[in-house]
Amino acid sequence: MFIVLSRSGADVVATDPETGASERVTDVAEYVRRRETERPRWVWDDTSRWYPELLDHGVRVERCHDLRLCHTILRNSVLTADSRLAQSPRSSWDAPPAALRRPDTSTALFALDDDEQIAPPDPVAEFADQQEAVAESAQPGRIARLLAAESAGALIAVEMAFCGLPWRADEHDRILEALLGPRPAAGERPAGLAQMVPVLRDLLEAPDLNPDSPVELLKALRNAGMNVKSTGKWELREIKHPVIEPLLEYKRMARLLSANGWHWLDTWITDGRFRPVYVPGGVVTGRWASDGGGALQLPKQVRGAVIADDGWKLVVADASQLEPRILAALAGDRDMVAAGSAGDLYAGIVASGAVDTRDQAKVAMLGAMYGATTGKSGRLMPKLARAYPRAIGMVEEAARAGERGEIVTTRLGRSSPLPGSEWLATQSQAYGESASEADTSRARGSARAWGRFTRNFIVQGSAAEWALCWMASIRRRLTALSGEAWLTHAPHLVFFLHDEVVVHCPEHLAKRVEEEIRAAAVEAGILLFGELPAEFPVTVAIVDNYGQAK
Image (cartoon, rainbow, N blue to C red; front, top):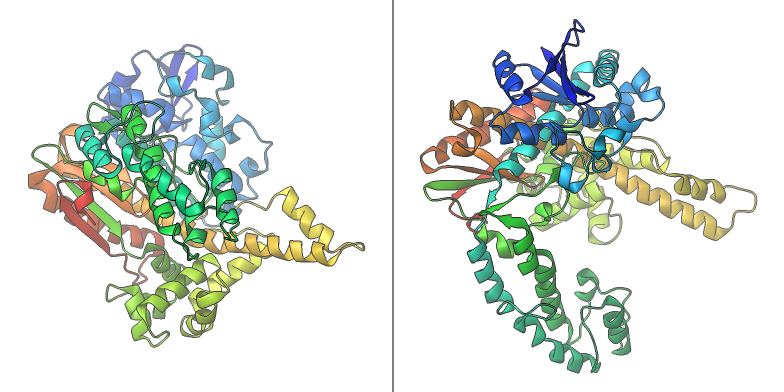
């Protein structure tokens, strides 16, 4: 059963899309609470607009259909390319979520605001178009599963922001002081950074150097005889010079200060919780993004400040070697699947005789998935291709498709975007009558770059789908475990990072939660790959603080 919630002027309207019957709703929270016992799938324009205020009113929903997220998938998927929805003119349904809300009104549900002037058109009609697109798809079960997973992810994102990640501000401050020195006055460097400045200036013979300025630092490095193109740590690590070690340490400390220093602490930690704004589907591959707070870049230095409440535990789980395992299952490469059956995929590749060491196996697999064709990875690729022709053949085929400017698609049906007009112009120019050698070289380079994107798209995107199914299963299982307890009083998801989740739960339920997380990983594999014996093992740690997990 579906119930479409929409706005009509100042009112909220609930519609049964099967019969077309509608009713005006004066108390949305109470209406949703009452109808939730019937286990409907709520259909609305944007979960981030509707769900936060329902949670604020003590109402949690089991299932939803996020029209905006689903529209993006259906608009771009090759599985629904012939549908009326995919071929219709672009509308406000195609606008990104950020364009439809202001930061201070993102949860406005029961009152009109400036967002109303750009509210999307008729959600009931849009839902009908989406159902038609799915039904007419050559593989409706495949794309429908992706839409359900994407919508479940939207609910989880809002719930994690609502619950918040437990965070001890005093412990965070202690960590910063230990690493950087006492909290400085506004505009000043912490002592730990300040005392390193004269060291850097002396080693580079640049008495006025501001090491926080990339332009000044690059100039000083070059003046000291280092032929560098940037101040990036990867390039600096290849250089032998007395300044490199202290400079890298300075950059690590400066990065911590800017990304998770005292300003971050004052801005993002409220009432002992970190509540980032997650953006499901924020990356074209389907991976999440975050809108402030840097939730997807939480450094290990500050994870010790993530501390469970008294009597509670953090259950931290991450999927081991997820992307190469996804590739093996995606390609149906049973030899590579078998290599991972003992637990360590890279060790299994070595045991198969494909390469000599675990490090070689890891480097070769990363090269296969990300398109490294030179250096150590490039030398190992032929060995990997001989041992696992189906898996390596799949990413190579995806790369060639990208080089031709074609679309590739994930396991459940998310398709890659077409290259832009600049890319097309570069390719066209290379084959004109007046094309130069430089034009041809530039076109080949851009084609290879897009091929690297499509090569990784099918793997990263399918891994993102597995993670969504994993989280959706975890959420359902935690709800069953909780009984009638409210969300924050029972085990609940509080953090997600691509292939890692954190659950905050009462201590006596921690082992049960671990079991459910492992079972959810098995279920996610079956949802994507059926009975193929692909395994997706997870490493689980039950800890008091996040820093203890690894």
